[in-house]
Length: 118
Image 1 (cartoon, rainbow, N blue to C red):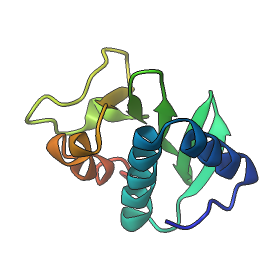
Image 2: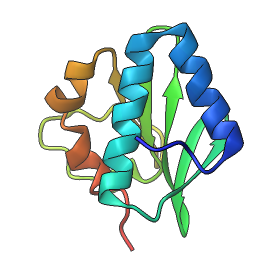
Image 3: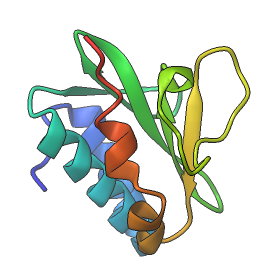
Image 4: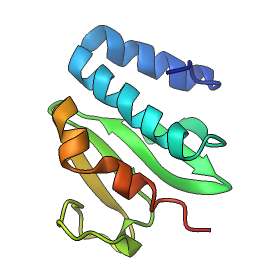
């Protein structure tokens, strides 16, 4: 995965890499999914995590003590046949990831593809 064009994002990624290899690998894979689906995506640091935008913010990745969370700005609109999405707020939904295997098991790619509804 290429380095981030945003220096603060890259510093965050480097910091995660130094502290926790599992979370770093999850973070790296989530970024790859985003950029594979939406190559024009921009990243920025906000709220303590990486926010992804493409005309407007559509989601973000946050690293917590026990997991990595992929947050979707308009997750309430998503198809969620297997009830993977968590959260009961008005708009946002998230997926908690504790291992690399969770990325495929929870079908993160399926949800990322729904994140940009233009």
